[in-house]
Image (cartoon, one colour):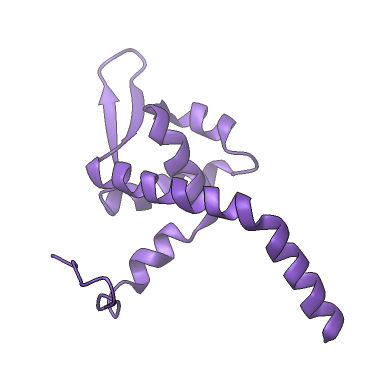
Length: 122
């Protein structure tokens, strides 16, 4: 689907809530950013994503695989090894998330200050 628009127009966003819900999840963002560097095995992801439970990581990986953002590859070794990597769509999302993360870091203090001013005024 082509969502190319003129610079002063917005694309029709009426059907993207479920997609935005997926990428708005804090675990999804962390896994996507981690896999941007290289494919990883389950336990490596679990070690590098702070505070994620095994159950939540399993759910997150399954949802990302279902959405076509990661690929799950089983290696024929003894014992079998499972590796997760980003698909082309996942890599595209990772680049977008990276830009968002840079923005968030750059504006973190501004947002904290704004919240404090708002809360004080209430």
